[in-house]
Image (cartoon, rainbow, N blue to C red; front, side, top):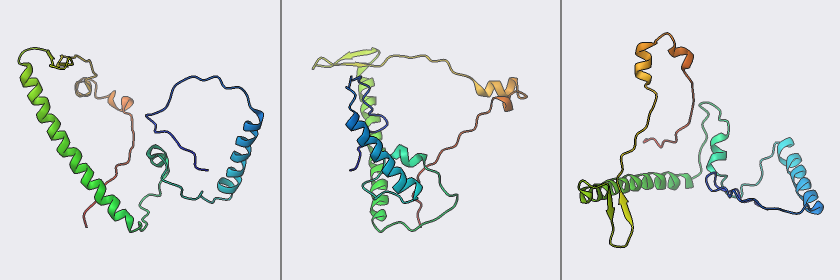
Length: 160
């Protein structure tokens, strides 16, 4: 039985009252125990029934500089990714052009009323942020005490 894992961003935060069900609890505990023995202790991965969510895959440890051969279908996945990234870039440029038309149509107003009743707004927002460049100039001796290291991975498809 494959369990559906919700997307990280689509978690339902509703509160439900559920009556305790001892039989269901036993079933869940037995399933978990069996899975633990068959996969964790035996070090046998479960059958590949679909791809895990991206946030799970991103959390997995990687062997530095380790290489493997990908399946033939990965060529199509790579091509699809490149094509979709190009479409996203083109769509982003289209959105910029439409934004320019809407802002131009607003003239000097912040709010425009569309004929269908919706509003287009272009408000000014302020935010306060930390000026790290100035901090480095004013207090260079303190900078190392306030440095925070983070790491991340980025997926690239490099040409031959």
